[in-house]
Length: 222
Image: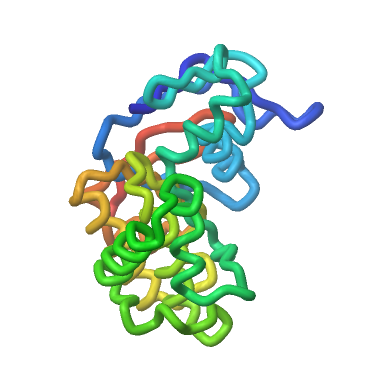
């Protein structure tokens, strides 16, 4: 599903990646670990073409960073769900409207939107929260809403950038288990985190580490 070949990326004079090569298969669940500031978020942005390589390329599905037209990027992003550490929920809209936001781009019938939102909310244990405002929810509940919004359009790839960064250990475990459940249903999941303790609890998954401007497969010692 994803191929990165001979990729180089830098911010001005600061080189982040050099000769990076990586493949992610369809329906994989992958952790990306590394220290804060080492390039995890940069790699995620390269995956959804928010950033483009200085050299080499990123291929996702039928899209290639070397040849993509800017007009195609919105089409690419409809295939990707993104979850952020700080949730990025709309505090002037209730949970229903937050989850529904991506659907207004692709669906024009209110009943179709309502059905998708209710189906997704039911899967994530949010059916009783649809009229609540985000600021009245706990951190774990807000992250569930953010995940619901990310998957409501049935993306083929779900990217989560530090999804447990603001949560306590118990809730963090629950969020990772939820992402694993989504993966089991057929969605490719790519999770970036600096919390190696969480990764160790799920060491049966593929683990990549950002180090020395490259990405390496690693094994976790329990």
